[in-house]
Length: 120
Image (cartoon, rainbow, N blue to C red; front, top):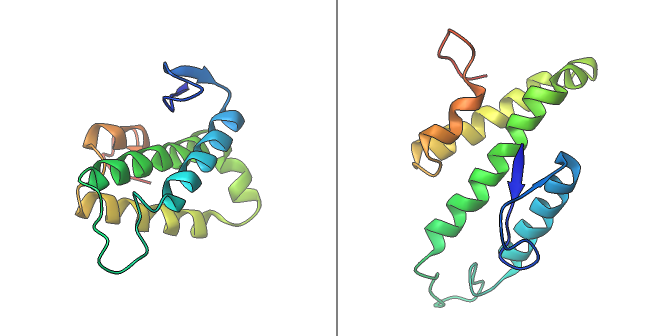
């Protein structure tokens, strides 16, 4: 169960169905990325002091998309023959966020293979 909070419409963490959570997440990320106060596009304009914190929040929430896909929809990905592509995307994401310490290790635990300690 994922709970959405955006401090605007959803002031408290609110349990939502996965499709609604994903829609809100993608809309929220788009707003963050298009916000020039967070992601300045002009030369010489500094990034905000909380830039890293905002990026970590975005990446943590995106990771939840991978978790949901792997747990609830991977059988469909296999049927489409896309598992190699999804696995490659996940591996790139995983190596990026772990190398730069952008996601708390406890957030990564849902995709640990049972007993093996390996990531998907």
